[in-house]
Picture 1 (spheres, rainbow, N blue to C red):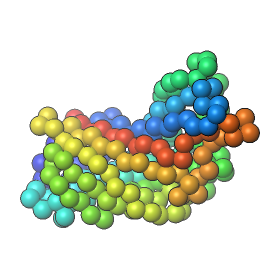
Picture 2: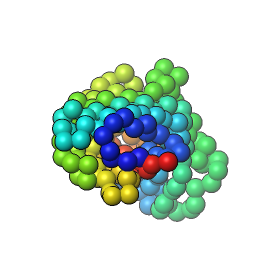
Picture 3: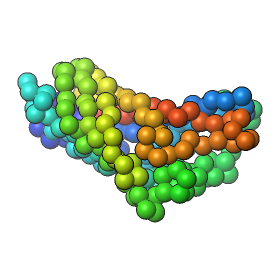
Length: 183
């Protein structure tokens, strides 16, 4: 994806969207920090050269496309069965409830900065709840765009996963990262 004026499609294979979790609690050594990838998502960025306030971004993620890509830490490695169980838990009623809420959407409301360093404020809708989020991003001369946002799960009615009577739990805050490059 170049940062030239115009409309640009976002999504795989030229883009990645990752969710990174971290552990907390007394039993955090037993768990894993996870990197989860959205494998089915799409979006559009409209870049208005010298007028960032006229630019816009929309992204839609299919909630049942989240796949565990990496697990760090923990007392033992995460196996395929563990990964499958995590993905089932993500889809369940307690977390994303993917059958009732098949998508997560982001729509920009305000963009500031330059193509090299920008902030995008927008409305993030998860499980039917919409709240503002700010995305911090940057672009390089080769046309690669990278960015991140922090999201507090409980704001959207998601109770962070916990085990061992709460001794091991995921932090309420997760980090969303993206990268998009041209074809």
